Length: 202
Image 1: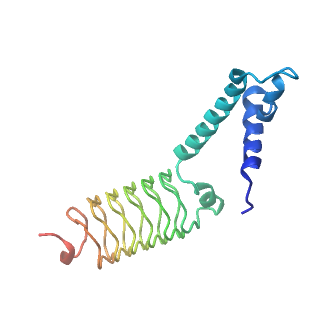
Image 2: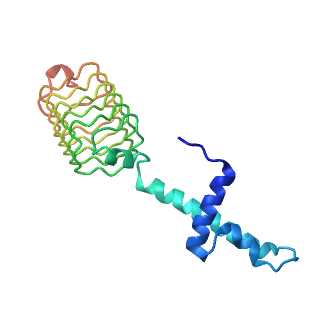
Image 3: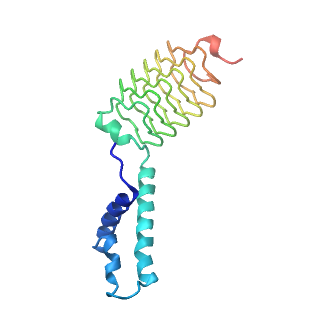
């Protein structure tokens, strides 16, 4: 990626925000003072504070939208986003079947009702993710972090959960027929469906 020097970045955002808010570039505010006079700290400070405020607002807006790499996933047709930051992303009921999301960060993402059939989520971080009623048939979740994830009513026919961390995960009504549950960590399968007796707590 082409690097941008700090001053170039300031000029770009100054021009952009200055034009949007006041109809003139931030760089030109100093021209408001009469020629040959000492700049008034009040009149020069206002635009600067406005610029800082709007820049912070833009950053917060981008953060609130969730998922720094969500655009990348969308541009791939929801097919691939290896190692992407999709934390907090809203992927409710999206079709992610066959998607390669290896080691993606899906912390607190909303995947309720999403179709993740045959998706690759090896090593993905799904801490606190909402996966209720999601379809995860034949999905590879090996070594995934599912701590505190909500998998209630999810379908995991033939899913690979080998070595996954399921500490505190909600599994009531989750369908686990044929799922590979070898070496899972911290799972409580009470209320889950079609789990081998070997994995059920006494």
